[in-house]
Structures are given as C-alpha cells and as structure tokens.
Image (cartoon, one colour):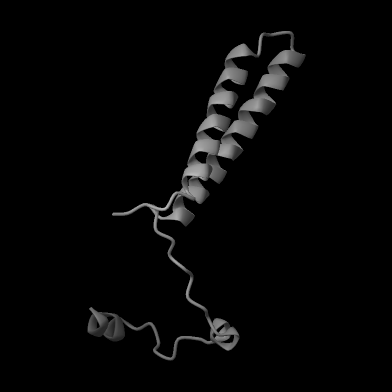
Length: 92
C-alpha cells in the first residue's frame, strides 16, 4: 500500500485541527490560572508534524493520483439495477 500525496495532505489537515484544539485548551488553562506549558508544547509538536507532513507531500516519491473527471450529468443518475437479493448474489 502506497501513501499518496492527497492522503498525506489529508492527514496534515487532521493534525492541524488537533493542534488548534490543543491551542484552545492551552488558552482555557491560562485563563483559569494554570500553566499552559504542556498544552503549548503539544500544540507546537502537532504544528511541526503538520508542516513536515504537508511539506513532505510535495516530495517526488509520493505518487499523485489524479481524480478522474466525472461528467456533470453522471452525478445525478440512479443505478438502473434494483438492490434485490438476487442481483446482489449475482454480482458476487
């Protein structure tokens, strides 16, 4: 299994969301009089991992799988074969 450029960029987005959540928790901790040091360190680490993952996705050894074009009319078509038990068994 190969990690594609799109998958690596998607993972970077999820890590970035995690970093934002950690930053919010750090500020809440700071407002309550606590030390947000651990949360800020975790958020910094997540941001660093995000930068590495997103930047690394543009390296040449990650394949780029282009999305095939879908005709506009095909998006609204329904399956002509009904979902019956016989059709599902025949498809297997």
